[in-house]
Each structure stands twice: as C-alpha cells, then as structure tokens.
Image (cartoon, rainbow, N blue to C red; front, top):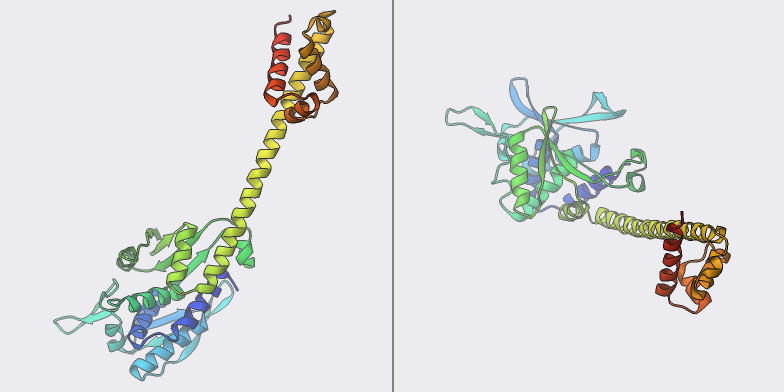
Length: 319
C-alpha cells in the first residue's frame, strides 16, 4: 500500500464520524473528485469511479443516510495500473443539486456547476470535511525520500501534495478556499485536468493535519527529523573531509618548499633557528595538523602557521 493510500484510509476512517451537516459536503467532494456526469435512461446522474472500494462504500452510506437511496457497486472492465475499477451511479437530480454540482435554471432545466458551491462549505467544519473527502477522492502525496514511506515508489525525491480536478473553475475555487485558511496552493494544467498543489514539506505537514491524518503527520515529521539529522551528519562529514584535504595540500606544499631549500647548498643552515625547528618538525610529521605541530613544539597555532608560511615564501623566491 502506498503512502497516499495510507493517508486516504486514515481520512476515510475519520470522516465516518462526520457531523450530519458535513456529510453532504463529503458527498459533494466525492462526486466532484471522483465522479463524472452521465445520462442513463434519459436521466442525468453522476458515476462515481475509483479503485478504492472503501471510498465508494462511504459514498453509498452517505447517499442512503441522506436520501434513503440504495446504490449498486459495480466492477468495471477497465483497470488502472493493474488494479480493478469500481463504480457507483447516483441517479438522483436532487442529490446533484444539493451537492452543488447542478442547479435548476429559471427555465426549468438543469445547469451544470463547474465550481465549488460556497453554500456547501459555508461552515468551517463542512469545509474541513469537504477538503478531506476531496483528497480521498482525487488527491495524492509524495515525500522525500519516497522509499522510506512508500516501498512501491522507488527512490525518487521531492515533496508534492495535490488534488487532481477536471474543472479549472473548481481548482480556482479550491485555491481560494484553502487560501482563506492560510494555505498557498498553485494550479497546473495537465491533459484536460488541473492540479492544485503545494511542494514544501512544512505546508504538507500542515495540510495533513488539517485533513485530520494525524498518523501521517507523525510519520512524515519523523522522516523529516531523520533526514535533517542525516543531512547535518553529511555536512559535518563533508566539512571534515574538506578540512583534511586542505591540510594535506598545505602540508605537501610546505614539505616541497623545505625540500627545495635543502637542495640549495648551505641554505638550510643559514635559516633562522626558529625556521629550522619548524622545518624539521614538518618534515618529520607530514600528516600532522597545525594544532598537533603547535602542541609538539609548545607554540601557538598562529605561530606555527606564520613560520611555515615564511618557509614557503623563502622557497618561492629561489630560482
């Protein structure tokens, strides 16, 4: 089971205890996110299709509790990534109207509404339930690294939380509604669909908390903490490695300078005693750091560095 599926199961489990006023918002979101309008036997209805049977059973339960209608769960011939698709057809114009998907015009015919009916999400609890149900219907989430939470997804990287909607108007309405709650979603068009998404890990954690996926929040936060610890350890390791490389390069340059001075007859003997001392110490301890040389000679690190620099400068002036 993918991480997205775990999140959706947790959301659906929480929505079963939704308040009566929120159940209509849930149904509206399910029909908006996973439904498509169809005409069957001369009647307009909505076919709710998903590979997630629990989602469809939740929709059936709401339709029955609100309207006393029994709907049939059917298995479709088509599949998605090898998984069977199931569908439920809601053939009730009043349901579509109540859910804000369609409304009667003044002329008496049904008008399709491509946006999110503000009346459905007027109360905060209803908006919260709507967003949670919408994610269960058409949402997805990926986090970095995926293999930690989702063994089926491989080793890709990135943070991504999105709703995939078939109406741009609905996408814009969703961005506006979530914006009122402090979330900054963006919209991207994708092959007759619109993705409403966020990409930063902090916002994704907040969004999971908003849709009451508390276990997912804990799991994602633990992952982020582990990743931060690992990144800090890598940074420290890289810093130590870089410092070692710099020390080795400096030591090689210093020893090369000492050897060049020694190669000039009598020049080493003419060096000042303190420069002879540091030259011998460096030649005998090629892998020692400046701190280690300072300890051996009873000097400060600054003094050792200054004397070695003097040797390098002296050698650079030789032909």
